[in-house]
Length: 220
Image 1: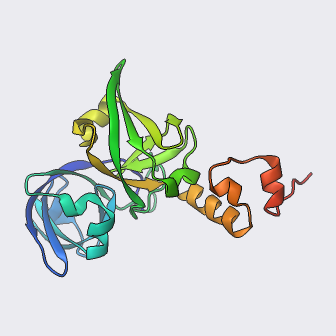
Image 2: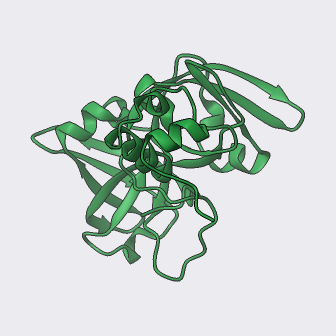
């Protein structure tokens, strides 16, 4: 598990395609201290450290990972967001992130607003039930607050700290990003689907009638 708080922006130094694609990434996190087999989120995708040395570590991406994330488009020299896995006792500063990318989205619009940087992304239909205003979303591994949701798009704001410490601020319209919907939201949507409340899952929203139709009743 992760929190969506980026610890470093690493640099891809080498890529070796094959049955499993190998990526070597340089980082200031102290790769020598990494444990072989530990998990690390690379642009939000959970990968396994298989080699380390000096300031560089190697991870492997399966074909499924390359298809479902932006990692297949990475090139030597690209910057990537990095976060080591959460340890018991760590502070949970963002929100719970699994590192399992749900969909690839794209930037639709960017603009400055006060001291923040606003980004508007395409909202994949399959993730719409997980999105609520002021809810959480993971974009390229970054825990962000959803400021607004429309039928086919959502909006977030990057504070200066996020602009400086991640790769997201440098992405403009047309750029692709990894999305992971809120973990709790996904389970709730799945529960309603199983309990026979498709309207809630298809974006009609929650109401007392929908909750009752799903088999739940208020107590007290």
